[in-house]
Length: 147
Image: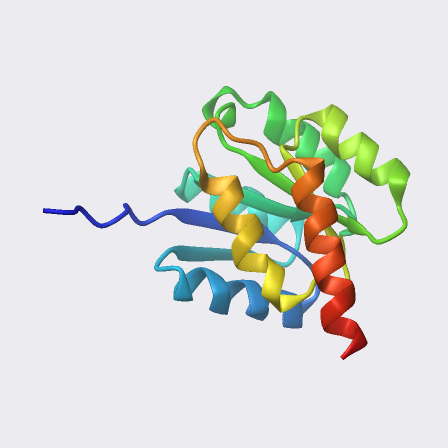
């Protein structure tokens, strides 16, 4: 008998409510549990209650870099993969996120069609969301926005 995939806790940190709601819908459709945080302080409170299986963090949210550094230093979260959300043309933030320890990037504006794909990649144990996937997601996003 095939066992269903275990339910995963996914923490999303973003100060744009519409984006949080998009992530929430996608995560629930995948059969997982979304934990939403508008601020890094909200994320800190969530992390007191849960150990997420994946974190998606918008680096443009005020004080994000400081909180991300604290997150990566916390031994309890050492194995938790983090995908950074960065601006479409912000190469400096992208490089900084990868150096800090993020396994991959999601660029804004985020196309709804790529969210599930990136989240699925981030949930695979021992896998990283590669730059190739990020480029694929960006190309897909451009095709969707041109329509």
